[in-house]
Length: 80
Length: 201
Image (cartoon, rainbow over all chains, first blue to last red; front, side):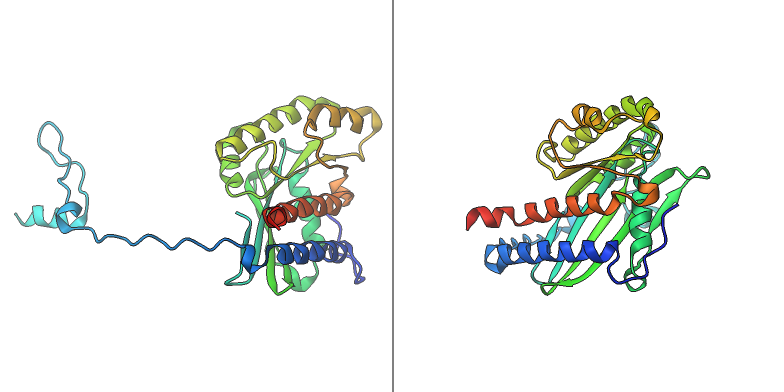
């Protein structure tokens, strides 16, 4: 089983943190905001045209609808 | 996935402990967790079977606090070592920044170590990583077992460490070699993080 945490300040984690802090500080300094590539803006989303959105439900050979692309389509079919 | 975000001033790195079943990956994380001071202890997520074998993965978020103005977090994961959890291993490797390969030093486990290492390479390649360059550290665990039961470190290194990466002897169950390994992989990951900038300057 794993050991209990050490009581004194200079435990294993503290030593690890001290070492890693230096590495992180170096990395941050080397990178610097100027060296970080700017994020590319997200491409604008083209609105989906209603006609494109509507899909015909898939049918089996016997004509029974087995897949309903969305609830609206299903409601329209039920109302008919 | 390693991120330095100047907007939110955050650094996040993902480290995965890989290796065959029962090699001591979860024990490594348990030891790290046990050494965390109370105020830094988050939750270690661990999903295990009744026999204590990792079912899905272990996850230990390591909040290092604010360093040079950046909130720094390491995320430590393990993978389930058993052969039949291949899909999970692949999933956990997504966005990995560094890998610790935990090898079982027992002589009779050598074939399992080799198989797991090959599995690691295949999965890294599948996820779009170059297995020859991703930060990697080898840990030869269970060095506390009787000498007659374990392979010499030199033999393990010759068989498994063909990249010549840093390697550490460990007895994770006693906490030996755990932080040395973590420190080493952290250094490699952070060095890689700033490498493009250093090259360009």
